[in-house]
Length: 171
Image (cartoon, rainbow, N blue to C red):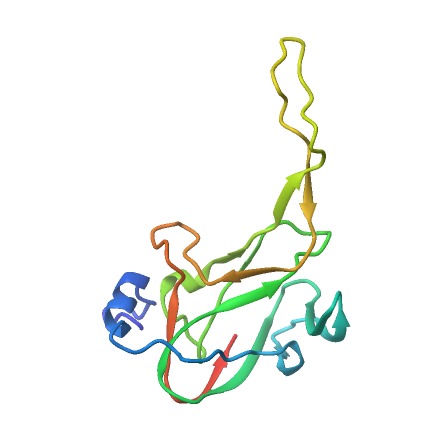
């Protein structure tokens, strides 16, 4: 949804108000790494098998654009979920999501894929006064799944997209 006055993507609240009367999808649409197209300098490859997952997209530096073309059987509201693993050389990653070449709403311009952390040990050290010290943290470099959400926290429910029946491109 684009504001007629500014030509910019609408806020999610305005977008949701305009699409909320549509039904939620009855089944998922799964996009495979094997179906991805790289453009605008994106450097990547598809690994047929990686850590127990099939057709894993490896986007080497996060530059450029990765897109998927897909067909929606019936107009409905969809939640978008991403399965990802952050490489050793990175922390949180920020991506943008475009539907058919445009931001559906402004919150799609900054989607944070979070690197999760855990205590390096389950034992708490103490200082000279007996206070527990915060344990050292270690990154969890496993696959994680995330539904599209508002990184600013204004909207607490997963964000939804209205996908009309027919062909679309998600980038």
